[in-house]
Amino acid sequence: IDLQTTSTSRIRIDSSGNVGIGTTSPDKQLTFGQANDDAIQIRRLTTGQGNTAAGTGISWTWTSASTDTQTWAAIRTIMPGSGNTHMTFSTKASGGSVTERVRITDDGNVGIGTTNPSSGEGTPLTLESSTGYVGITLSGTGAYANIWKLYASGNGSTNKFFGIYDRTNTAYRLVTTASGNVGIGIIDPDARLEIKGSGASSSTVSLRVRNSSDQELFRIEDNGVVSVPQNYFYASNSA
Image (cartoon, rainbow, N blue to C red; front, side, top):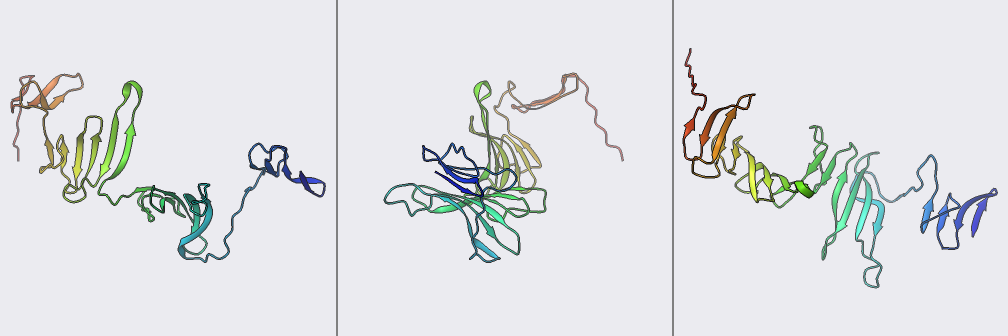
């Protein structure tokens, strides 16, 4: 079936049931052909400016007798002010309702887990969670497989920190607390820099300093021994 105006094909339904708008060779159930403009425009004339919740867009449902009227996911635009727009992405958890997961604001900031991502601070991406933990996962594969997590907020109640967590070996490697203390091998440092060793003998070292030639200049062993291998130590107390 070919619908034409002014002898030009506008809508084509081929023998497979595929529908083409602006194209005579659709290869999907619905195919749009447009060279220099948007192929689809969606309008909702009843949504007024300044409505921060309502919007219009595309939603998906699962086809069955009991779920045809349920929304399972959606992409929507909303108009929170006068002439500006936000875009939202929503999904539905099992047993839950459709919830906004990602928002792109009118000024280009992106929020994951928040409807109000930070702006004007050089941080176009904001992650937020109500669990006390929020972060990102970095995962390697193959010969270099290891899972790292960058966490903020710690447990949310006592240890508020930013940390690098080695999930593969279930250990925090580095943390910075809200008071500015830094911990290596410890999650609750009470000094500006606190290092916790991995043992209690001379076979493990908590701190080592080398020069550019890879010579060891200074070390603190986990048994408490401080060594200056190059036999040179100088201390000055000048006014």
